Image 1: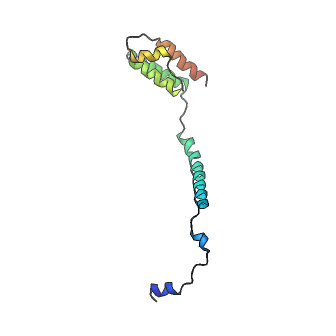
Image 2 (image 1 turned 120 degrees about the horizontal axis):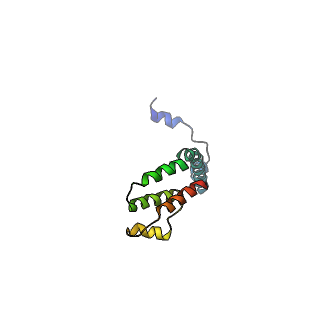
Image 3 (image 1 turned 180 degrees about the horizontal axis):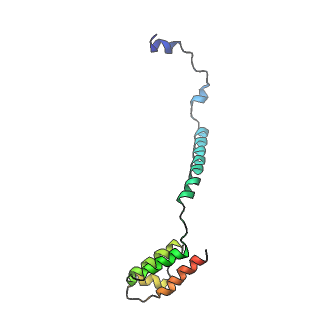
Length: 120
């Protein structure tokens, strides 16, 4: 028996024609299931990829390493640490980033960084 003869002997499908067509409700349901699946997959992944908060000891070590840097680069690194904490340099300190001749109190910025870590 060849395949053409076999397919000719098969009975027609018993499903209604409506089951064979894709309706907008089907697409919405598939989209909703996809969103639900994405949320269920992302929850465990978020826990693994979450940033850990730096400890005060780690911050002290980082700030101690900055002592040897030139003033503009030290200020930039301090700004990066503040950014990690969700804060920013004050207006005068931001201006010093773009005008290297301005003086900045690095000890005050370090105290703000450590104070922010203490508040967590």
